[in-house]
Image (cartoon, rainbow, N blue to C red; front, side, top):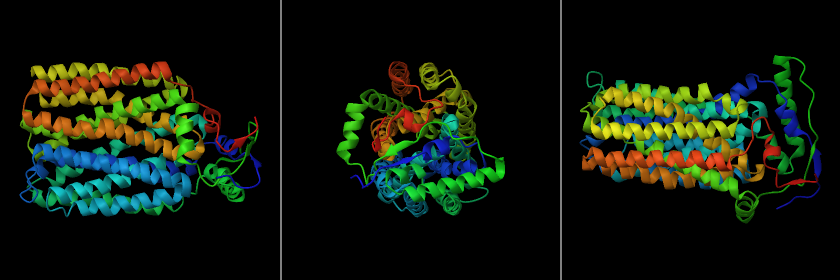
Length: 478
């Protein structure tokens, strides 16, 4: 596991003291587009659910539509675990290139599906690409962004999921309009939108370097120093003389990899409270989001009589409200602090969701009023969910960051995300508003549980170097 000679390095301090620059914008755009792609995929299937269900070739039931959503999420679980393991061993750059290629091929293949099983299999591999992206990209972004901006940036990047959702909703309006194109062809072409976007992503990612933090722990000191020097020169040309480096260097005993046994010991012996917190935050937001969002189009068509071609008009404001939440509230996670803001956003979302579920069961809401309610709820829930990814990324040492993100994403998605769409698909097929209300109340209760857990177990990471929040396993000395 460990390599030969230890060495002293100030790579983390040099990266954290950099002013915000075009380099950081490149990192955010080239890597953050992962969430755009995920939002695009989720919204396409949500907006296209009616057209896919009515497809004369596929002939899916409401339950099968829910199961294909679960197949996507199962793929995301598999991809997160497998590619997350590879990311900590082989590096961030190799994996965030491979995972976007997996996504590109699988999403285009989805447009050629011929029955339920082919559609589900292609959705599985699309999810695998996206799941791998989460671990590779989240770790790279957190390791390249200065500490004082990490919370704001991470929430904004995760929030761009809803930029993709807006693109998906707008695309569906065009591609499901019978006056423009046959809906049977339109839903198939819609999956090409993500494939086209991911081609441009591959080009941009050529300019993103390997994480110097990952390189230093793997004994590649000279390469890490060279990359940091190149970044500093880039920023200095734009911003002028750089501020002095603050803090003491750290001493690294380089290693080739971290075993799964060390990962388990670190999570459940060194940081047990953080592990419980990560599990609760990820699982609760995953259930709430995936249960509601994957099946909302079915609610609109079944209970409000909204035609499939018009679903995008309801998804669009929903997506924009979700996008606004992390962008508007993100700054406060670095100023007011993680614990207060995470508790507040989970708690507010849970209370509002319970009230909306009851109003839905009573038939008090029109389709637009229901959409407006979800828009307000997920303004807060979107910031909460983004903060869950931020929390699990900050909780554990650098050598296992990608695997840690993958494990918590996988567990949260498996428990909260896979069960949610299948459960709600069955509840909707039953046709009883009261049954669906109980599903919404379950989601609300889970969000409130997450809020209480954060208040009890949350920790301060705002403005701190990653190495101060969680000491690297390879760091020696004081």
